[in-house]
Length: 91
Image 1 (tube, rainbow, N blue to C red):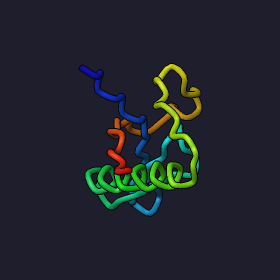
Image 2: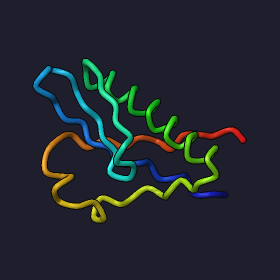
Image 3: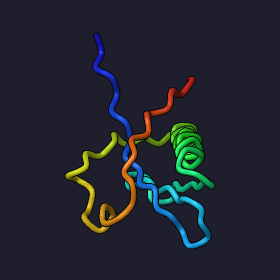
């Protein structure tokens, strides 16, 4: 039996415009937002799936998710840590 894949780490931070911004340390350009934390999380799952799809279709490798101790302290300084499951990518 295969071990379940680890989720990716993301951070949700409240912005001045009252939206919640989501960023992924493993994918610096992959960001999302939402009006609520729940919406931001849903949008983050979609953004991660798109990022992984783009990498795969460009013939690039999707990196394994980092562990929290591998992420720099500056990235962890504030915000809510969430775990976003790895998307299932069709061939």
